Each structure stands twice: as C-alpha cells, then as structure tokens.
View (cartoon, one colour):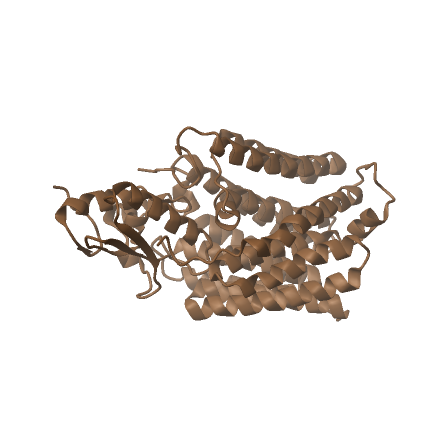
Length: 111
Length: 361
C-alpha cells in the first residue's frame, strides 16, 4: 500500500490511505497546491468513534482558512465509516515553516 | 464537529446593504469627476459622492471589506463592529452627514488596529506586523481627515491598502526560497513608502515602483501562473496589478514634481493595482466571508480584461471619460460574474470547477 503522508498518523491501516487521499483533494487555490504538499496537516488520529485531524495555516490573518477547514471536513466525510465523528481542528503551534513542504511542493516553488 | 468557527452572519447585514450603496456612490462620483454625464447629476447624494469619492471608495468600501476579511479570520463577533461603522459611514456620507461619516470611519479604523493587534498576538510574523502597520496608516489618515489635521490623508489611505496587499503577498513569498538581501530590500522599500506617505510624494511614488519590482521578482504568482483554472487566474490578476503598481508609482513621483500625471498615479494605483487585486481575490475571499460557493470558469477573465483595457485607454489613450465609463462597466461586469458564478454553482451537477476544487497536479 502506498504511504506518503508527511504527518503523524495513528489509527487503523485500512483508513491510512483514504484519509491521505481525502486531504490531498483539498487545495489551497492561492498557492495551487494541496494542503498535504504545503505541509498544513499536523496529524490524523482515528479511533473507532472519531476521526481527528489537526490543520494549521500559513497565516492567522487569512479568512480562507475556514473554507479550507470546511473542505477538509467534506472530503473526510466521504471516506469516514458511517457513524464516525469527524473533528477538523485548527492549531497554531508549532508555527508552520517551509521545512514542512513536500519535495514536490518545494520543486514547484523553485527550491 | 465541523470546526470551532463562529460565523457572525448577522453582523454582515449592515455592510451587505451599505457597501453596495457606497460603491455605487463612489463610482458615480468618480464618473462625474471624469466628465461622464449621468442622469442623476445635481441630486444631493451625488454631489456628496463627487466630493468624497476617495473617502467612499477607500474607507467605506475597501476598508469595510478588508476589515470584514480580518474579522472573519479572528472569528470574534466584536471584530465586526468596526466594519459595520465604516459601512454605515458610507450611508452617512451620501446623506450629507460628512463629519459624522469621518468620525465613524476613524472609529472603524481604530477598531481595525485593535483587531490587527489580536492577529499579531496570535501569530508573531513579519507579515502580521505589516498588516498592523497598514491598519495604523488607515487610522492616521482618518484622524487627519476627521479632525482637520495637516495630514495628507490620501497617501496614508493608499499606504493602508498597499501595505495590506504587500503583507498578504509577503506571507505567500515565504513558500519560495529567499535570496540573501530580499527581506532587507523589502524593509528599505517599506520604510521609504511610510516616510513618503507622510512627507514626500516623490519618495512615496518611487517606493511604490520599487515595491512593484520586488513583487514581480519574488511573488509566487510567477510560478502559479503556469498552473490552470482559478490559480492561474489569480496569478494573472496579481502580475497585471504589479504592472500597474509600477506605472502608478512612477506617475505619482512625476505628479509630485508637477507633471500632469495625477490621474495615472491615483487610478493606476486605485483601479489597476487595488481593484485588480480585488478581482483576483474575490473568488476565494467571498466564499470565506459570505459562505457562498462560486463556480470558476473562463468568464472571470472578461471583467478583468475590460478593467485593464479601459484603464489603458483612460491613462494612455487620452480618453478619460470613455475609459472611466469602461472602468465602471468592468466593476459592474465583475459583480454580475460573481452572481452568475454563485448561481452556476447551485445548478452545477457536480462540484467540479468550484473555486476550492481546482487541482493543479
């Protein structure tokens, strides 16, 4: 199975790739990259009752953050088993840095 | 649980009614200034709009929209008090209560400074500090305007808009590898911009032009313009805007030396740069603040092309009135495009092509 998430994942293996794929469908149009490639996903934890994802943003002043959170929720809802609650949480610690960008994101931005 | 967002929709009611009125007033006032004959000429509200064109456009329309954007980011209902006041100021201005409008906007700008401090406390970074500096520029200009102090409010108001946009782009340029000296160069440019806003038109203009060059060199738009869909559209808006910022900066410096370039300075900056940025960012900001989904398509390029073509006609073709009418038509066409995109999304069988669904991979 293909695993290339750049965030800590804890939970059943069967959901690892679907969760990653769901998050990869969430795009920040301003930078033309997925939130996984930008490194905005800080972690995903899945228990039988709950799918909990931690997201950050590059800026605390950007209102688009909430649209991205809603999009992430909608995509995770498509892959979560029926009855599982979904919690997409916005966090600011630790602050996002360019170290979190994927190799392809850095290549796209000319690193 | 979806997330902890507190959406203060009822706070948007007054701005939703007042901002379009202020925008229509500002545009009508601008058209009359440019020599376009309007059927309502001579009516009281229009005379007030002619007198306060820049106040209506910068403080009551753009200031309100930017403050709402920031309030949504902060997510606290109190943050919406400021934009409600600046939106209400637009109505007061059109009703010939100009002094009340001036004080309302001053209060709104001070509230905006407070909201910007909250952002800085949440994230201590160069771009949030710059956003705060922009807010202070707005407040300084408003204080001068309301209290009749010897402050040239228009450069201060423009500094507010330019610093706000520069801060948001600075945040984006973090994704690219910085060459040594890049940040220092930007700091020098911004210090010159601030000094110029309060003391020297030549310095202000040259700083604007230098900022345009900096953005053309280091903004991610140079990379995202190679993608497609909404991301490319936004990049096109940005790059065209930077071109106008360069033109406007040089024109501002020239106008300050007495050359007949005042219209190129004010409207190259206000329309070419600032409204161009609004065209570029509205497709992602509107869904965030109004919770309305928009469908992106090639039609979005039509108002953009009209805006820039009519501005070129106005500033380089010597056709002030015709160009100004084209500018107004471009803004109306953009509003129609937004409404059409919202309706198109509602009737879309799938979410393909919605503004937050573009996939660059």
